[in-house]
View 1: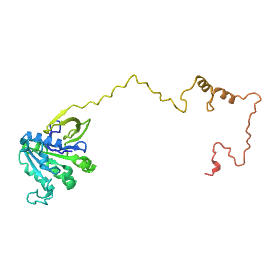
View 2: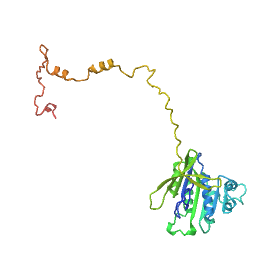
View 3: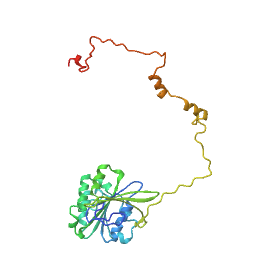
View 4: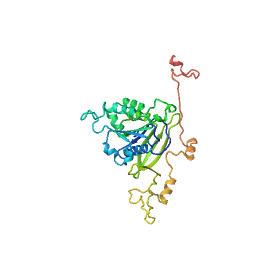
Amino acid sequence: RAVSGRSPPPPAPTQGSPCGSASSKDSVEWEGRSLLKALVKKSALCGEQVHVLGCEVSEEEFREGFDSSINNRLVYHDLFRDPLSWSKPGKALPGGPLEALRALDKRTGSGPATIALDSLSWLLHHLPCPILCQTLHALSRQDSCPGDTLPGEQVRVLGLLHEELHGPGPLGALSSLAQTEVTLSGTMGQASAHILYRRPRQRPTLQTQWFSILPDFSLELQVEPLLESQPPSDLHTPSVDPTTHLTFNLHLSKKEREAKDSLTLPFQFSSEKQQALLRPGLGQATSHIFYEPDAYDDLDQEDPDDDLDV
């Protein structure tokens, strides 16, 4: 996941807000550092200041693939070699990861700037989640309204987040800071980005964009790949009867069907049986019930419960 401040929502070039942030999720199968470097290159080509806080890879590895014009515009703040200032206290970033993150806001100066965090997952493992969210909130300058932000104060924050390393709590907190959230996935070897846009006083919108990243970290938008068609089945292949070699018979012969239809089931109350019960034949014995009231029998139908002494 990449967290961005004022950036156009990656990877599709759409208009964004001068304030706020965006996020993009990656996974083990679909890594997001290439997309982060592609967005860094795009910011550098637009003439912006680009500050990279490197935590997971070395400066040489991050700069690899950029030409000299892009590398000249990158200011790399190295937290990878000595994050806690143990080996060279004078040369390492003072104050650890938190002070290094806070110092980026002061180093952007005037003019539009891009801050790339590689990665937010590393920062989450070294900083409490509330402290990191507050620092990102101040870094992207969300305290001011879009109308109050001058063009020279526009700051974009890009951050890579490995979604599979964190629980729902930190993921939800960082998502609440993002104006644009990008989830990387793909199919058939082609990458896709599910982009969730959040704009002030507007409903969130979701868009899916297929893309590829060239060796020079340029974005190339693509169309959605078509699913591979299934090969046509052979029409001359004889069909196999699934009812063969069974231990029971699924079909009835003509004689068996006639015997089944002529059978009267015991629970069927036919008209002949009804007439035989209602009109007994001659010589058939009839039954009578003789009842002699007991002394305690209640024969008063108006109050049948008077013997209950209620």
